[in-house]
Image 1 (tube, rainbow, N blue to C red):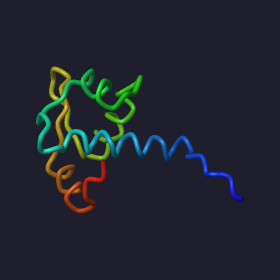
Image 2: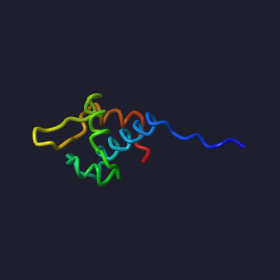
Image 3: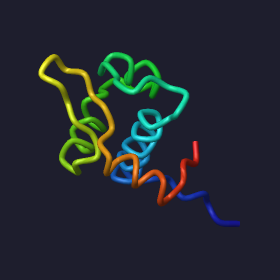
Length: 85
């Protein structure tokens, strides 16, 4: 019997970014998010971790007052791979 593989820190980070993007592109959800709302919905202590990764990738943008929203590229990525939440 094989032990179940434990996800690495990088895999957990990727999953958190993916889930955050899925959250932000949910057609039934709000189009713009506060970082605090992301923390609450994604159940993470540090929501800036996925936010920074998604910002660097160009999949979300941040307003001058700190709110974030998915870019067209973010929406398209979810269209291509499908939303699997």
